Length: 483
Image 1 (cartoon, rainbow, N blue to C red):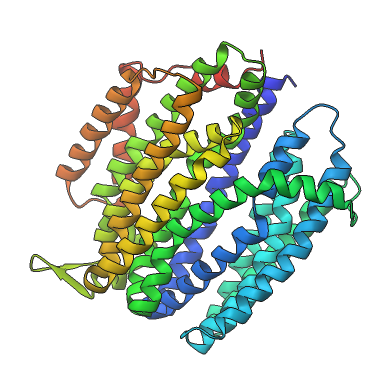
Image 2 (image 1 turned 90 degrees about the vertical axis):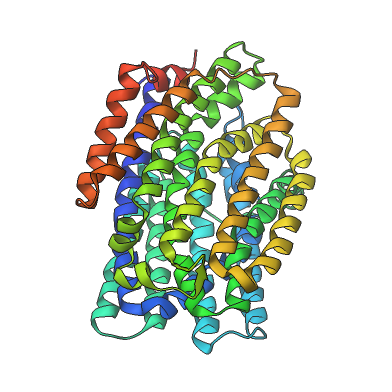
């Protein structure tokens, strides 16, 4: 199989895996929201938001260093992978234990504190697994990573449904995540044995070199996660489980959607890295194609979710989340539906900011992004403490959207200083008009089945972009070509 076909295959496999994983996640969310209710789902959301902070400390950019280094010729795959795996094992144990201990001194319910310990242990296995995913990515065998991830998620779903059926409560649902993530890691370790022998390695000089390379990435990831998650944590401390539950349902939808640009950029990352390293004239064209493809994906997602926010929340989380409210604005109750409509704008910005963040890593300009991220984090934290007391989850959603726009502006400015790309906005204009037409038709058609609405909207959009030649047959394949 040629290099181009391998990358195309990996991209398709990842999207298929993401579709399967998303389907499993949606079934799980639907079951959890209906079983736990708004406040119970708020407890669930608080646990995951809190542990997410510590997960970034456990990773600290090592994944990106691994992928970048093992993509280089003459790199000792086994030596660097085993050292990073050992380093992450030690760091992960220390970090998640520290997070659990600190949680005991916060004003959280006992069930949340216990959940933090359980999910911390679950995330420990996920942290180790991501090291092996880096190996699969470098070998262009992401099908192996997809298989292990889907199996792990299926285990989580199966156990969680059993716990719900037995009415054992939230604590036992957290155990389902621990079991599923462990299965995911063990399967990955088994499949990775084809490429290397996993064992503990203690090359302290390599640890030092890796840590130095990872430091700017790790800092930017920490800052990125603070602005992405701090709203939920502040909401949990200032408002409580009910408001977190209302915010948590649309936020889970946001988390699923922002994986789309990440998957795509992960697939083209090696190609863009190669073009930049070789100072190839193809780099600008590749960036243009990546931009066009992400734009074509972004606009229908933003417009579609905005007009279908109510049936989406009803389908994903249930009727209680459609009507639950603790805030009135202009005489109208603000619900999870309104929060989703604000958050989907953030998703639109993230499609493009993701591309520019990957370019920042390729250009080795991670240090340059630290100060802008600090600015965004300070704005995010201060703004949330100001708006959440009065505007609760709606205020948090607006701050999140503004923060994502700031990230887009900052990452673009860093890349533009190094690569003077003049992007053609022709595809953007066509995609915007197509998505707007789609949204208007779906909106005025009115209350039809959610999936009929999605199907109708997709048909209208696809006809428009193909008719206007916004998308071309070999857009992605041309981008993924090695030569």
